[in-house]
Image 1 (cartoon, rainbow, N blue to C red):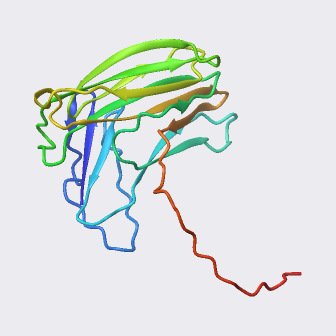
Image 2 (cartoon, rainbow, N blue to C red):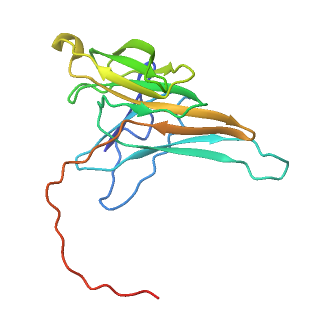
Image 3 (cartoon, rainbow, N blue to C red):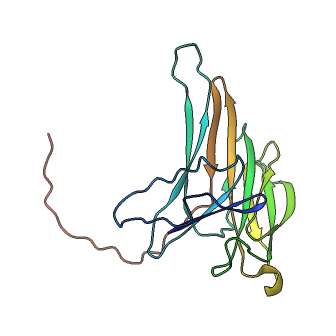
Length: 213
């Protein structure tokens, strides 16, 4: 298994993550403390299906001497690149859309090529557009776009590019939401919804019900 990081300046090599061995049925924690602060896309390549996630952490300040240090955490579930659906954004917080260009399968992870483009739109509660911004990224990079105050929903729609320009790269994105509290920052990460495969039939079987009283 290999873990690759794509930041603002391109691919990042984090020592110890170039080749990992994960035993089926076990869980592995990968320490990302060596990454420079910033926004990243994390891509996991494995020979067999794996389930992955990332944890974002903010350390606050104790309210009074002797109090425990507050720690705010947010989990980000893995998903495939793409996703043109709306993300609902809560009001009253500082929000940034984080957009990454994921290189096409088979491309070099350290020297990806190509450009990928999309259109980012933010809407207020009435549905009126607040911003319409085109984003064009080099494959293997990540950018953070501040969302205007009053944003209630945001979408990113990938635009069609020629094969020479796109080179098969895809956009992956989400919204980072933060708020300042009395003892630190609150944080949440929102991603486009994942829809499971349509189910046309459901198997039902009879069973004996035991009362628990």
